[in-house]
Length: 141
Image 1 (cartoon, one colour):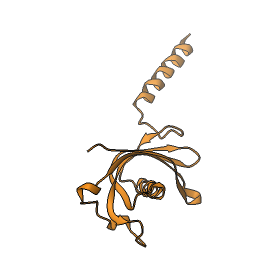
Image 2 (cartoon, one colour):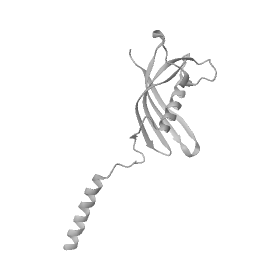
Image 3 (tube, helix red, strand yellow):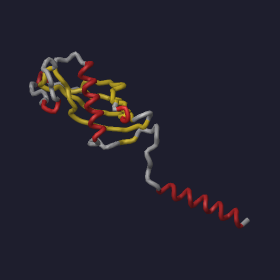
Image 4 (cartoon, one colour):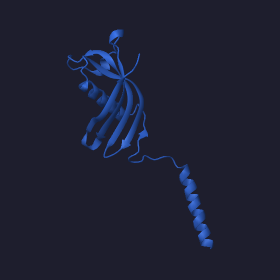
């Protein structure tokens, strides 16, 4: 009987200790990540380029705010981004445009911002990063 009590006590103590442990990255579970993380910044750029390639707008859009960034480990890494993108003054017909050098649209009639949800999948060991899903809705002014 004494061994049984020791076993139960050990089991209960192990359970209590595990409650105090810090959360680990769990494969398959989306977890919040810093918006300033270098890989998140690459995912944001990839997402923005995808939006610009799909858009029929004459101007480029770029990130104006990142509201949420998450990371999910699934055969690589999936970045889940909730962000706002706004119209810039740079036109798509211009060659070699660097979005960092594009100011946001100053003409009130041409200003436009979208709230977007993006999923960007990265396979770092193959140096692949691509947008797998996005949906954007215009923000009301």
